[in-house]
Length: 216
View 1 (spheres, helix red, strand yellow):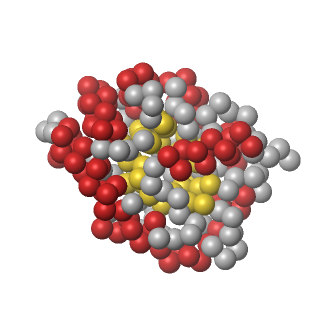
View 2 (cartoon, one colour):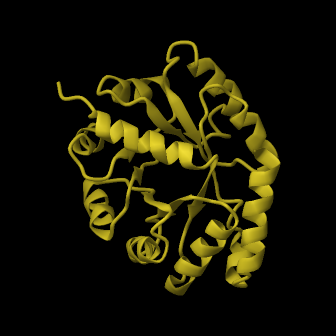
């Protein structure tokens, strides 16, 4: 059985270590992508997960990669191989999925962009574990047990590391970051829809900087 390469695993480790916070970004207006991500970067955020939840996701990844070469820019909400390929073609440096399938896990073993697979159960984790994956997205975190669930995973999977995402807020992120098996936390509170709609990029920078200062 093929196994995840050292290159792929080290790349994901590097991404997770680059920032304790990973904003989950959904682009609803294509012109927002670059100034929004520049505002986050100005606030200290070095990793961006731009989701493919809208038709503008792939274009946003391409544009942000060009505008912010110093940042890590990945694709989120990737649910099938076609989207995986689309994200890679756009220049995504890593891929994040909300769940796992054998096809996605196996495709990633030889892909250019490494995968942070999403899991919510021990069985899903074991699918990836058997192929050499040790870094996972834990989603939707708050719905599936949150901090208590991740504490429970630490027993049977002591070398697994997680990026919990889903329902986490600025005031609850600290509880996750205090866990031994959490490297970074994903969240949409860094990009509130009402602030993005007003194009108040200075406030986005303030939210990012304030969150990092509070949680570091």
